[in-house]
View (spheres, helix red, strand yellow):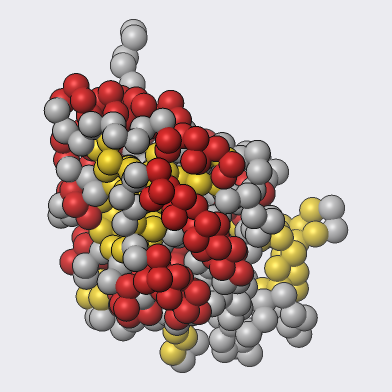
Length: 428
Ligand SMILES: *Cc1c(COP(=O)(O)O)cnc(C)c1O
C-alpha cells in the first residue's frame, strides 16, 4: 500500500503531481508520502497492539528530521546506532525512555551520553561492551538497562551483506555464550540485564526466521531468569520486508501472529525496531533523463540520480521498480510485473553520471521510450536511500520533500557547491 498513483498518465504523490515537485525543487529529488509513512507505522501498531509494544523506528533507515518528527508524533520511539542518530531522535522530540541503542561499537562517550539521556535499553553485542557499560554507569552513578543481543545462528534468509543472524557475522553474542556472559554480571550494581535482543537481518519476506528466533528466546529466557536476572523485555528488532518487485511482503499481522503470543507467554514486554517496513514504500527518487546512448549492443539511459544518491542496486543487487513520471502514450501505468516482457519497451541500463561501472539503478530493464528531459521515478526508495547517500564525485546530495495531501514541504534543501567544501580548511 502506498500513495503513489498514476492519474491520466501522470504520477502523483498523494494529491501532488510529481512533475510539479520536480519543477519546484529540481532533480534528483527524494519525495516522501506522509500518509504512506503513517499507514505503515499504524499497521504495525495495530497488528502488535495486544503486546502493547514499544515500537522504535530505526533511524538509520531514513533519519531525516521531518520523517522522524512524523513517526514521533504518531507514537513511535527510536532505534539508534550512534550518538548522531540519538541526536536526531532527541531533536525529533523523543524522550530517552523511548530510545533503544544498538550497535557493535558504542564508545564510552556514546554510552555515557545515552545513559545521561536516560535511554530505555542498550542492546549489548559483546562481553567487553557489557562490562564497559557497567563501568561507565558506575562512574556516573546510574544503573544501565541492558538487553543481550543474541545471534541465534539461523539459516541464511536475505542478502549476505544484510543477514545479521548467521554464524560468523559481527553482530550479537554467539548463542552458546549468552548464558556465560550473563552469569558474569549477576548482581552487578550498575547493570540491569532486562532482556534479550535479536535483529535477524533485512529484508525478510517470511515469518519463519521470527518463529525460529522466538524458539531460541523461549529456551534462553527461563535460563537467564534462573541465574537471577529479571528478564521482562524481548526485543525482536526489525527486518520486515516490503514490496520492491511486486506484492511479495508479508503484512504486519503475519509477523504479529508469530511474535505476540510468544511474548505474552514469556511474560515479557515487546520492543520492535522496524525501519524499512515504515519508510521503504513511503519514498521515491525522482530523476531526469540527461542522455540516451547505445554501447556494446546495449541501450543506456543516463539520468541525474546516481549511486551516490541510491547505492542499494550496486551494493546489494537490489531491485527497485522504475517507471517514467509521465509515460509515453500506450504505456498508461507501470506493469504488475517489472520483469515481464513489455511490448514496445526495450531493455535498458538505467545509469547515473558517476565514474564507476557499478553506477546504475537498474540493468536490462524494460522501459517505455525515453527522451532527454523526461522524468523517472525509482520506487521504494524511502529506506536506505538518502541515509546512505554520499558526495562521491563531488555531487551535492539531493533535496528531500514531504508531501501530505495537496501540501508539500522541503524537508532537506539540495546541497550547494559551497556545502561540498564547507568542512575543509584552505591550507593556502
Ligand atoms: C537496521 C536495524 C534495524 C532496522 O531494520 P529494518 O530492516 O529496516 O527494519 C533494526 N534493528 C537493528 C539493530 C538494526 O541494525
